[in-house]
Length: 220
Image 1 (spheres, rainbow, N blue to C red):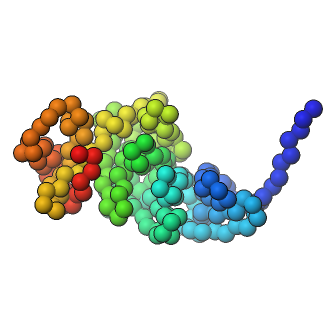
Image 2: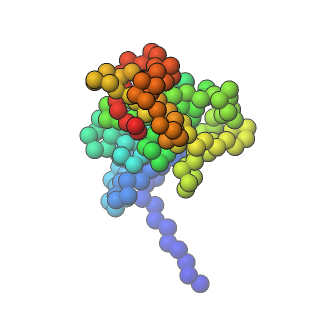
Image 3: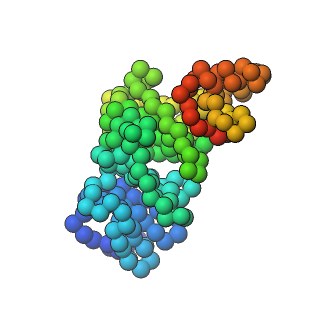
């Protein structure tokens, strides 16, 4: 009978809620005392960020940005630049209580909270956030911990009192910029379905988000 050998590479009195792997040698763990970094080859470890803070959600995206959520907002840690920052209600999130994180095929970050689902569009140092609630079709505004998942077909699944499905390609927004000035958002599906004039595009963009102060040209 073939047996399997298990090896303990780290042991401590920490409540580990989630883990992410960089594909080479580093493992990141969301713990009750912060973000733990662990070298899977040597066993060397260190508490990297948010020391003495419980992390509820953890996700490493395709750009090597580690996203962490807790009751104080959404923290990001860029593994390439080592830049660290945080987003909260003041930055556009629907709640500071972050429960779930996932990335779709368009590199958009979906963030589940205690009050709604958020879509974060992050390009370099610019971002935009869209909020979705029960009135938009979300199953429940209070999304469970680690309850967002991306299917192979790119759809985002969210769980709470039921199971909800989102097709990101139908809610992707392109940012319209004219002469270096952002004028608002345009739903990319509009451009895919029919040809429209630049005048009509600007009109739609302003109507969708009249308060937009800055935007970049994408998905157009």
